[in-house]
Length: 165
Image (cartoon, rainbow, N blue to C red; front, side, top):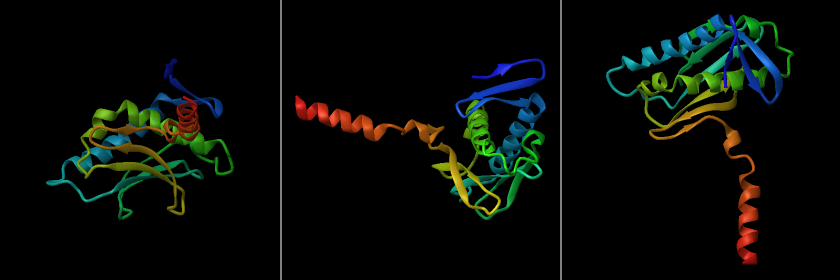
């Protein structure tokens, strides 16, 4: 849920009290996603990509979106994330913020012309995958690995209940 104030959008998340991003920052992230969607929407046939890679450089706040061949599709600078290379909370802030923005812009993402399923994947500066942020399939939009949390326990409880009946 977004709470808008004069020029700040507050994005609550369970790992931090509240994260503040200016409306210009959120607009910059949306614009970067839009640039990516537009670049891929104008291909004549479905591009043979498997994922889109989001990389944040916490030293300068540069957020880039790249294709499978590490070609940059779009980039912006997030001043609120700059200079936070030693901040343990930054990773969760980035994931939660990007998931929320991607979900809010689902229609735009649906127009991306690449083979499905594909994911928006968060990478570190060494191009190592750290998280799958957003999975897109024809009828499926997976926002979080948290959807699967507790599934083993639920299934074990269900099986135990069946065995007792």
